[in-house]
Image 1 (spheres, one colour):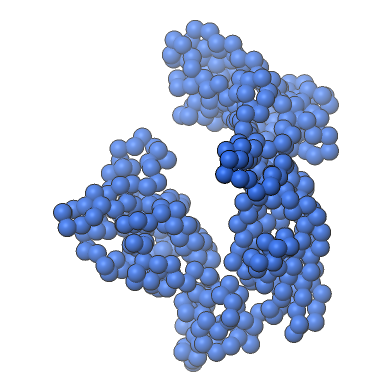
Image 2 (cartoon, helix red, strand yellow; image 1 turned 135 degrees about the horizontal axis):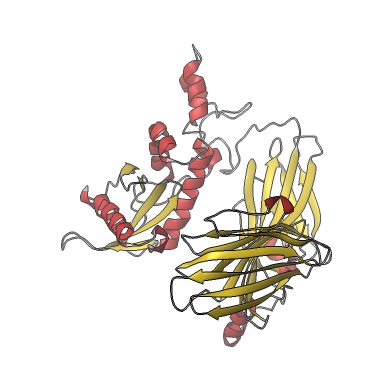
Length: 476
């Protein structure tokens, strides 16, 4: 009734390494490998394959199972599960294990896994016990029992190194003796820095669907607080907000004291060493009191709509004719103080589209036509002027890119296309991705940040900043 193990496949679907699978026969992991490879062969695109694949039993004495899988670069990670197991547990464990591999190997690829076969297999043994339950998943605790490749190479290259004493020393100056020497599994002992500092990034992502009348059909904002702590000793931090009521559905790092957060809405914690995600949350512009059972449906409806002003407007005029059509799209920034960055608008013109003739121009603030050219597969024109367009003939997607959209500025793209089909069938939506620096949709404000350390006497440098991104699907 837990996770049965992990299998890592290469880009050709061949297994590189797998965990023990002690409670099953040797045919059990092979069934899941075949099930995933068969599903990938039958699908037109690998992205179309369901992340959870049903695997039937190979004889009457065995129960059916499922295979959860994720793709990372040129690898595919498989996690077979059987019995009453939530697949989300498998995906959460796979993501944690992949993060551990990144910390150990730097780049997760078939080459690095093969070159560090022994390290990966040790991580299998330490992160998942024989019963299929996650065991040690904190990298600071793992480094006490599984030596990172770089450190192992140093130990082997130095003549006369006492290998056993080095392993038991905890790999840090002043570390206590033996593995798991730290009382906090997420933080190792004996951490020392010449310059003590801690930084926080408030990162928010906005998603919205807008109908052809410009009305928001659905919108939400998901955020997280990313931290990077480089502090000596065992610091105790506390972080409070001036408007914590805008936070909903908070998921906290295990280092956060849950009682203090529930009572005072203060993040009190001893941070891990290095980078970590302190909290994930959902922004609520209209916080409601705890709903009664009769109000649950109202609460769910309210949570799907967030009163966040759209950062831009789009006016699209598309005229379809036999075997082609024309388009005229105008994007106007609604912000008066912040610029939109890395704006990318994708417009799917339908299968068989081609013969693109397109030009982009800037409206307010001068500009005129930036470029005008013929069609070419993934060619880009006018990049030196800022905005540009390109066409992916394989996906039939017209892409419009604007590096920076200044406040209150407008940009236009117009042109025509042809299609091999008698009736053109473009997607009636434009999907826009963008970034905004030094801005958060929730306007979450930090009231006070304290860093205390009874055994160390230092004043750390503290920094807090915000940044946002967004994805808007605008129907026309």
